[in-house]
Length: 153
Image 1 (cartoon, rainbow, N blue to C red):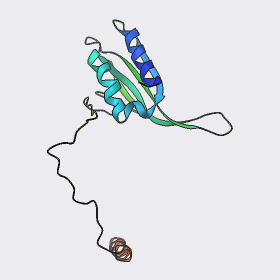
Image 2 (tube, helix red, strand yellow):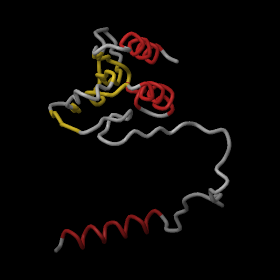
Image 3 (cartoon, helix red, strand yellow):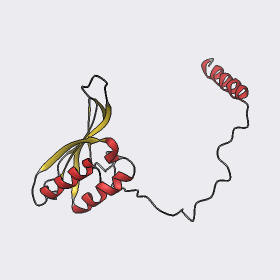
């Protein structure tokens, strides 16, 4: 568990049994990949809901040689069945009212995709990947022809 994940888990622990709402700034890794299932699934099973979130934005350090970090802001609390709070997503200058914010910070039902240690037995093995049989010049000629046809209409 990284520092951001620990802080979120600690905040949730301190919030249990209260109406406290918490908002934290974090790297956007908490809403991508394996971290989503590792961090959010246990929190949401305990009753945590995301009340608002700001989609990824770039934070620049004040150092002479700038560091660029991609961040999110997530506001969360324990669900209050009697007092359903309005939910909002923020994206730059837009405020978007939503029904439910999932751990990927989108309006949709909760879904968690964890890692697995073995192949899916039902998956079909690919014999070979993507293959282009046209030469580069043939592809360019076809694209140019298509573009010409579209723009001449």
